[in-house]
Image: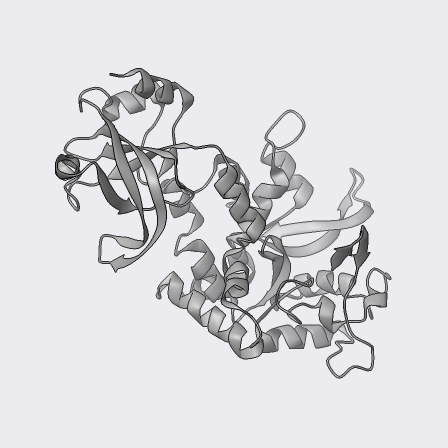
Length: 375
C-alpha cells in the first residue's frame, strides 16, 4: 500500500492472474509454503499479501474475498503467527519458521532474562508481567492493567509493537469487547498472547541451540531463494526492522550518556588508558558517535572509574568464547578519571537506585550531575 500525491494506492493482481490468492485457505497454504509474508507492499517486489490479491476486495467486509478479514481468520487459526513483525508493520510467520525469528529477534533471551540484563524497558516489563498469569488479553485490557492511559504511562502502541518485533507477543485473535452485561459490542480488536501460549515453549524456543546470526542467515538465504531480486539491504531491514528513517532518527538524536560495565577478569581496563587515550570497546546496542560512556569497573573495584566520549562506532568485529560475544566495536576516548572511592557500587545503589550494571544503560539525571561536577 503506497501513498501517491496524498492518495492511498493498493497494489495487487487481477482475479484471473496465476499468482492471485483467492481465499483465506489459499493464503494460509501460501504462507506455510514460503514461510513468512508481510501484509502490505514493502521494498521487496511481490513480497506481500497485498501484491497477490485483488485490490478492489480489500475492506469490502466479505470474509470470502477480503484479505483484511483474512488476517483475523489467520490469526485465530493457530497455524500461523500474526503481528507487527516486519519493519514494525503487520505480517505473518509460519509455525515452522517462527523459531528462527524468535532466536534472531530475541537474541536468545527469554523476556525475564532480558529484563534481568537490563535490556528491556519498564513499560515492556509492565505489559509482559500480565502474561505470567494470563494466556491472552484484549489490547484494551493490556493498556489499562499495565497502567497506560491519560494519567499513566505513555507510548502504549509503540511498546506493544516493539514486543511484537522482538516476538515476545503476537496477535492471537480479533474479537469484539464485552460490556458489563456480557454483551458484545463495537469493532473487533486485537487479542494478544505470547507465542509460547499458542505453540508451546519447546517449539517456540527450539532454535535457541544455535547462534542468533545463524538463524538470521537461514531466513536471509530463504528470502533470496524465493525472491532473488531482494537486495542485502532490503533483507536486512526485513530481519532487523531498521529502515532508513530509523537510521536517520538515531544519528540525529542528541548525545546520550551511558553507564557501561567492564569486567577486569576479561580485560585489564584499569591499565588500558595508561598506554593510550583512545581504545576499542564492545559496542552496546543504541550507542552512537559522540555519546558519553561512564565505565563501571566490576569486582574487585566495583566503581565508576572513567568518563569517555564515543569517537567511532559500528567497527566490524567477530569474537566469541564461553564468556563473551562481540559483533561490533566502538572507539572510546578518555575524558576524565575518577577516584574508585567516589562512585562505588554501594553509593550507586544507595544514592542513585542503581542495583546492577550488567549491560549498557542510561544515566539518571542526578548521577549525571554528580559525575559532571566531580573533579
